[in-house]
Length: 258
Ligand SMILES: [Zn+2]
Image 1 (cartoon, rainbow, N blue to C red):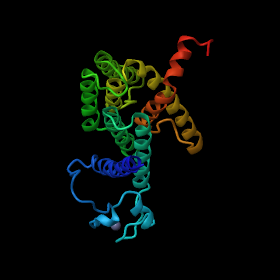
Image 2: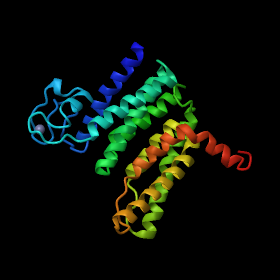
Image 3: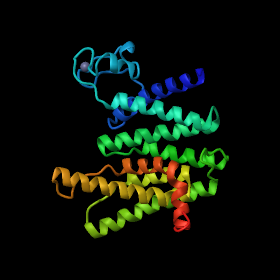
Image 4: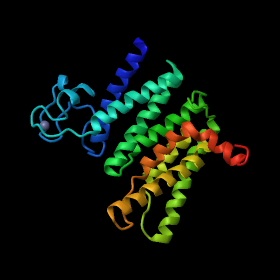
């Protein structure tokens, strides 16, 4: 029980730090480790008003000093991170697998929300994540049980696939459809989840993205040039891969047996 409470509190604290990364990464000169200030009135936030989740609820979602609204993203990221930490703990218990899984997930949370908020995926997140994925696979410590060869090929093929799609799209439409950030996200996913994940993630993310795009255009009556945070759909597909990856490949291999 103490372990469970500990892991949830750790999730809340890490979630709070991920919020800081999400907010400050786009501002290049901002230091991740400086003290917290309200983004609206710039006043320093006292530590007792900066407790994950709890402070947001106690303050009614408003800054103590300027009374302006605090973004819903803070409690959502904190709560989400705590839930994922708890679920991962249920899966792995206290182990090296758990630690590496939590690092992978934390990075994905940052990527999801920087793409969601700013349409940006940062190299400073994806590239070290890729390197770590390859290194732990080399030492047989990949929590998804991927071999070193699978990790390296997964990264390279993942990157090249998106690079190629992007290039073809550019040749046909003469505009950039996807950012290189998406390619680097696939680089990291290949390094952590191996080659076999790529087909699933590509297929499902494209499917989800298309549905979202169509619904968005119908509801908002906008033209087709709406910007889409494709990285968010890639990460949703990675989550679904954990649950349905096996069934998907069983179905592809034996479509009539299922
Ligand atoms: Zn304020």
